Length: 80
Image (cartoon, rainbow, N blue to C red):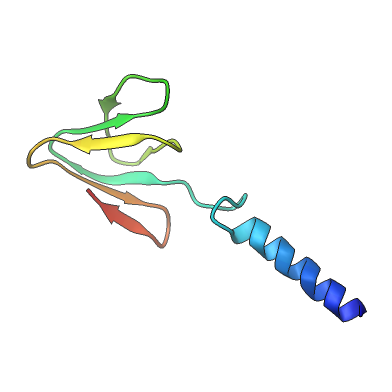
C-alpha cells in the first residue's frame, strides 16, 4: 500500500511540474522575424516583434504579406 502512495505522489508531482501549465514550462520566444511581425499582448496595443522577444501568454501574433515569425519554447517550434 505504501508503494502505491509513493507512486501516486511521484505521478502527481511529475504532472504538476511538467504538464502543459506546469511551473517548469518553457516560455515561447520569437527566434526569427522576417518582414512585418506584430505581437499584441492582452491589454496592450500591437507592437513590432523582435528576435529573442518573449511572447506573453494569450498574445496574438500577426504577419504582413511576406512576413515570417518563428516561435520556440525549447523542443517545440511554430512557424507563422
